[in-house]
Amino acid sequence: MKITDLEKKIGNFCLQIDHLDIEPGRIHGIIGPNGCGKTVLLKILAGIYTPDSGIIDYEGIGFREITMLSQRPYLMDASVYKNLIYPLQIRHIHPDENKTDELLRKAGLLGQKRQYARSLSSGERQKLSFLRAVIFQPKLVMIDETFSNLDTESETLFIEMIREIQKKEPITWIIVSHQLEAVHQLCETIHYMEKGSVIKNETIAGRYRGSGQREIEKGHTGA
Image (tube, rainbow, N blue to C red; front, side, top):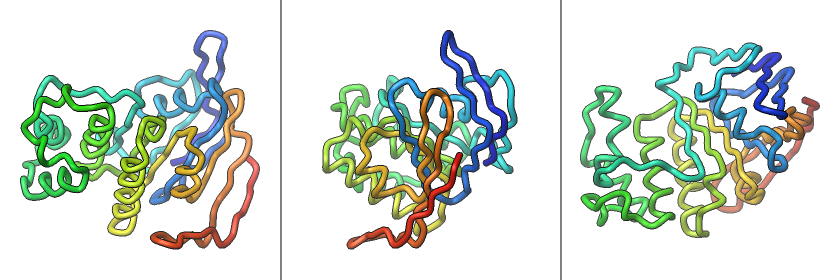
């Protein structure tokens, strides 16, 4: 994805990004202080906000192949299972119950499969929201501060599942978080924002995943 001359004014705030490359198949992190425009940028990329000007080249990715996780996930007035398979239903994809059960098992939610989704704890809601986001195999997943509400066990689960997806068939991730440790554990490229602009990009080269993960080399480029 290539972003050029993007601008969006909301009240006294102005998002202004001259140029930003989101390389496909990689995990990108966006960090910066509160109010710098991180969430506004994600909402523009998700089609929730319309930019005032600029060009976003999705390079072949359609909006039905994009999903976004918010800090406070919305769950439908239905069971855990119905919430999970909803993205498949609206795309006319028949759910494979063995696969959905395996996803629920990994997240520790299989026992709550028939439970009313809105009765889940906040951590369980986040887990369900994550599963729902990846079940239809999107090409772009955006995560807005979800890690901030997770306990250590859930955060570890999310990181492991993202790594597993990337090993099988890499997709593009954009992660906004104040949890800098999680961002640096996962992300291959980090974009730093301040006052509505991207001020620096950092690419972490030679990173390998799994236990003993380390960063071999870091390269810095200006925005």
